[in-house]
Length: 322
Image 1 (cartoon, rainbow, N blue to C red):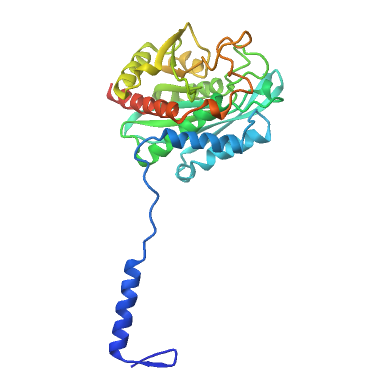
Image 2 (image 1 turned 180 degrees about the horizontal axis):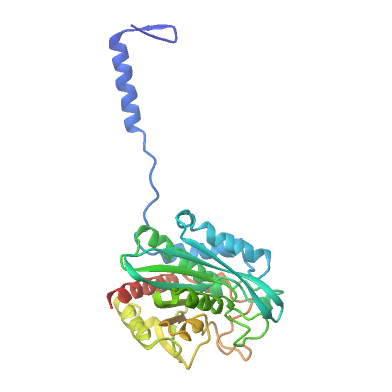
C-alpha cells in the first residue's frame, strides 16, 4: 500500500487519483509560442511609431533622446544580436558646424541564400537645428524607423531565400546647421566610404531608402537621382501590389537624400520618399508639416505604412528575380 499524508490509500484509489491527475494535466493549456508574423502589418508599424515617439520624441545627435532612440532600435533585434548580426558602426563626424560629433549607424543583417545584399535604409534621428522646439519627426524619421523594424519582424519569420537583406538605421542625415554637401548625410557618407574600402559595396545589388512615407496622403515621388531600372521596378511593384495610385504623382529633378553617397559610388539606388508633406507654405513650399512642430503622429497612418511595407517586400522579390 502507498502512504500519503498519513492516510492509507488502496490500489484502486491510487489508480483513480493517477487518472484524475493525468486528465488535469492533459486539460491544462500549454504555453503558446509567439504568433508568427505571416504578413507585414502596417498597423504594427504604426504602433511601433507611437512607441518610438514615446521613448524618444526628440532624437537630435548628442541628446539623451538620441541614446534612447538607439536603445529602442537595438531592443527590437535581440535575436539577431545573439547571432552577431547587429552591427554598431560608430564614427565621429569631424569639422561639422557644431564641432566633432560622435554618431552611430546600426546594421541588422538577415542572411540569404544568394551571394549579394539588398540594403533597406532610413535615418532615425531628428533635425538638430529644431532641437529647441517641439519637433518630434513623426513622419520624418520615426515612421520609417518603425517601418524597418516591422520589416525585420517579418524577415525573422520569413528569412530571405535570395539575397541577404540588411536593415540600415543611419545617423546624421539631417544638417547640423544648413544643408550642404558637407553638412548632411553624415552616416551614409561615412558608411559608403567604409564599405567601399572593405569590399562590401561590390556586393550590394540595391540600396532602397525609406523617407517620409508614413504620410496619410501618400504618393511616392519620382526621383531623378534614383537608378532608372529601380524606378521602373517600383512601377512594377506598385502594379503587383495594387498601389499604382500611390506613386509618381510628382517628379523632382534630383532629391538629395541618404541614397546619394551610394549612388555616387555606383550602387543602384532608389529613394522612396514623399517630400510633399502637408499644405505648402511660403516657408515650406514642399509642405507645411515638413520640419515643423506639425510633424506629429496624427499625420501618419497605418494604411500608408502598409503600402510602404508591401512595396519594399515586393521590390525585394523582384530584385531577386532579375
